[in-house]
Length: 343
Image 1: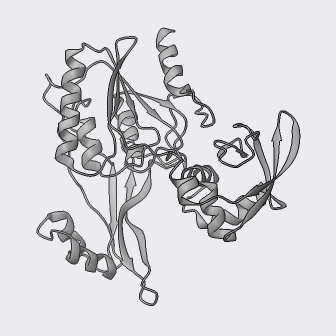
Image 2 (image 1 turned 90 degrees about the horizontal axis):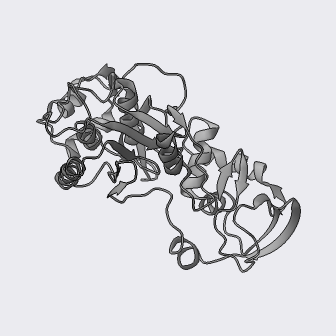
Image 3 (image 1 turned 90 degrees about the vertical axis):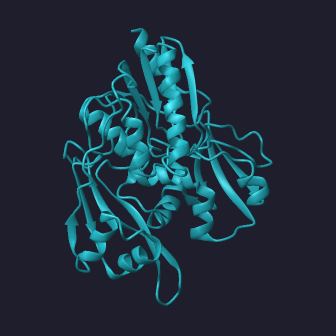
């Protein structure tokens, strides 16, 4: 299911009723209007606003959230609107793993990819901002060597459907575009606590200044931490052509921060749709177990402010707005960008 203009639209159909077409609107489930279904699900979604909730609902999927809120169901009575006509269906439930999880593709993509397109354009998908940092750097290094060898005039960086990750990964990518030392945030605040200190002592290298600062401040104290400047690559390695960075409502966490860097420093053009995540965001996750149940919870210990210091309560607003329809096989954003290059 994708959410378009507040409506629940069918993206995939694995039921026995093959006549339910992609692009049909889901009106209700088991006699409950879809708006009411969503309202019951919203409290289970960690998001500050409706736009972000809908992005998370697409990402984590309606079937998962429906099961979480309403429990196991052996069948579903649904009403569908297609081609101006309403029709009711009785759907048998399907197996969660074999018939759903093993068939579907995640909205979030984790692949790394470099291609050379028309208009002397290089397309770079950097992959996750996490994992083996040295392996990631090797891919980025190799990619920019190829881009320079190919004499590409335009660089398209794809951060759509991106889960984000760590600033070290985003900064290394930006270092090939930057023309001066840079930061990934204008301000970074931490709030320390007994739980955070215990986690830090158990899992981190406390000889490092960042982790030391957590231990040195009082429980509950909020303080600023300055990571300093990140140096750009040597001039002969950098890309100096036109930079375009694609984002959409499924761009999260560090991918949003990286897009804000490019936009705020003026190093490229942001293309696509508003991100679900804010560029001023709570981040830097750690976890601890609840004392009575033992359930592990993830919480943020830090707050990031984007480079320009402006907080308008929105996601990244692209310089070139292009709607991303998740219902079809088209790539509206990339196609629209290439078309704008022609114009």
